[in-house]
Image 1 (tube, rainbow, N blue to C red):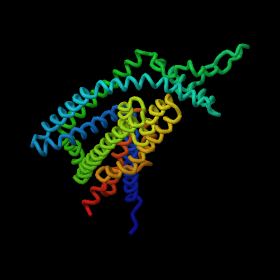
Image 2 (cartoon, rainbow, N blue to C red):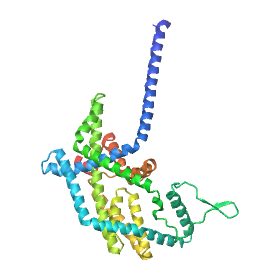
Image 3 (cartoon, helix red, strand yellow):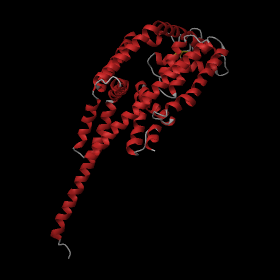
Image 4 (cartoon, rainbow, N blue to C red):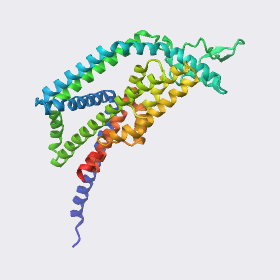
Length: 395
């Protein structure tokens, strides 16, 4: 029996209203996603600092585990004991090695301008060296004047009223690593104060997060319980997987940093490089940024070697290549049995992407952010073991 036109009309109106409702909900959802993305972009620096505080909290909670397990301290007291122990160890290390470290760092800073001049002179003697040196001079001069890498090169009068390109400064009088880069003392002091303020903020936030992490986890999970218990379980699992993955990555990375720092310092001392302790500290600290950090750590060592002749430069290059081979074939395979192993391609592209988006702070936190995304996809979405240790225990 066919519906009458009068009965079909309300049905069409109801369908139209349902379509309009779905369209409205989809529009609101898209607008919400766009607004959230813009908000995250505007607050990206703050969010990176929050992530840095989370990493510090993970380090403190990991250091607190022995106090909690063996000394039977409550969780909060264990975190405070770990914090006091870390501060005491740093103070003791500064008291024992502080004078030598300060002396070698000052010596390294004093030698680098001379080392750059020596390397620059050797580079200028190569077939295409003068052009490369001229481009480097122009680049560093534009950066030191605050014009950026893409600023036009300074123009000079050619003598007949027509503007011309200014000639490259002489090799001996370039002063490329002098105080010209920090000529604006007020701006530099403001930058240092800003960095110190953010560092203090991250430290305090990390300590408070480490003192009571379960309450923060429970609070976020409760936000999703009203939607569904399944969603809340997924969020809770994401917290657990992220915490485990980041903790294991941090432990492995800190172990690799310590090993590379010690090996580099001993190797630099063995071949006769100046300031071996400072070079070891630089190599160990830059190991936190995979792929890019070890390459950057090689530069000051090669500059110092340039002041001692081509033979020392060759020995220095061989030393750093050997260290990277030891790291890639011995240290990291041993560490990755218990830590999260991030594919090198993901590490490289994450560094490039976060460097372009967020600058130096993005470079520092690119790898742990990539680890976070990697373990969430692997451990929550794919429901797979996030490390070789988990795979072995589940088999």
